[in-house]
Image 1 (spheres, rainbow, N blue to C red):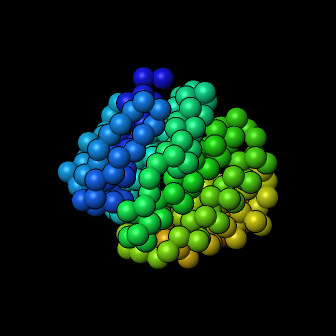
Image 2 (image 1 turned 90 degrees about the vertical axis):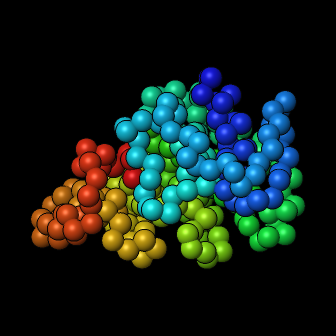
Length: 236
């Protein structure tokens, strides 16, 4: 649980700073108080919060609160510390419910919505890791809908297309047609996304569509330059 005591502070000081720019925000999480300013950046956090077994950078724009929240909150999911992940989700909910977002709202920054996405995704990942596909799908659907409602900006407020995670959960549940639609929707949001191409390749293999699987693998080969060992359906 030490990870989460430290991550709560970083969640406030780094994440809100990334969303709020130079504005100073006073956020209280239990008895934790942290001022946030432009000097805090995502570079303040690396290991030991997350390891190579959990890919967190899906795009060059993966900075700020979305990346920070998911890194800190989902660290425990691959380690199967579901109580720790749930505690992180509770911490996010506390910030979402009690923090003063006035300055961010005045700047049209959807900070509460982004926190809601983060919390929903953490709970979806826990359900997925527990093999509860039905709950995972419902939560991924909710997170994807929240992402769809975010205002457009570059870089985006959330750093990867959540519908690829929904598609992965649908694939795990054997709902292939729905999974294919969601992977395609993810690619429409983030073209040339290797994670989605990998998911499609695995989907077509499961359906016995060798031609389509080869096409998806070829698309993946054109776009993926990272460690292929990171490509797992549960990581999408």
